[in-house]
Image (cartoon, rainbow over all chains, first blue to last red; front, side, top):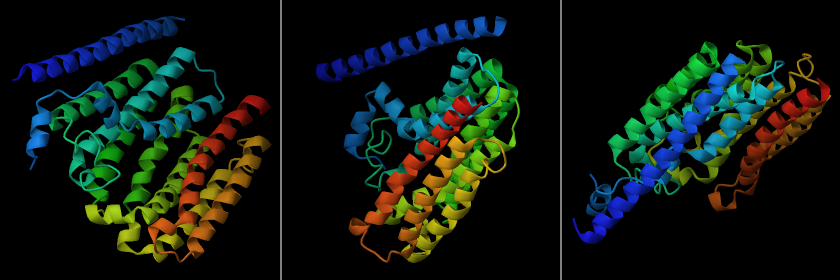
Length: 40
Length: 303
């Protein structure tokens, strides 16, 4: 793997990790909101 | 067989944008809109969080269906100009990653719908995903020119799901809305198929214009538009909606049938000159949005 390729690879992994973190954060908020709504 | 360029690009993991593209977000907007309208037109109050969750599940289920469709059809997508740039045929995504993502998304959407909303909506959502993937994509699309007719039912499920999510049951109004989308799909897609038929021919997909010819397709476009218009207007005389929906549906349906009649009578063979077909295709999208929008306006203003 060339240094350029490795850089691209890691940049893409970082971008995917950020997207996944955002999705998981949103799901935490959603599940909390669903729990509150179900209890109401 | 993948080219060296494709093999090289496979070494890089797909971008999140490619996963998003796999879900066919443009198709999703129509699905979400019809589901949301049916939910808002239901005669019950839905908690906003539960309503949002139901719409999210419809969107995720539709996205999973679209992703599974792209996974299965990457070979024919590769030879069509309109679809060659999708993540799989363009070589930006690994097939196994696409499959795992699609199945995971489908399972998640159904589970979330069942746990957070209700069982009936989860069952209909499951049925719509299986219908689109197994009946349309795997079974019918490559075998019969009627692929669009039966497959169109898959896109017609969201009003049923939205209504079931709100009320926990299925009534006549969402069934008529299902019928409207079901009967709207053939003229909508065959109008598109008329002016992009060279693409479908190259991919070997037996679309109506490819198999039966343009003349038969034009007749079918008109013939389907008539029961579609009846289905669209029916809720008004049946007392299920008020005059706002009834008037809007009647006027728009009249225009739709008029445009379909022009397509039916046209004898143009050159796709580049098919202005009536393009106009009808464009109007058909507006038609569905406006009809469902009127349904919500009717409920909000007259109920």
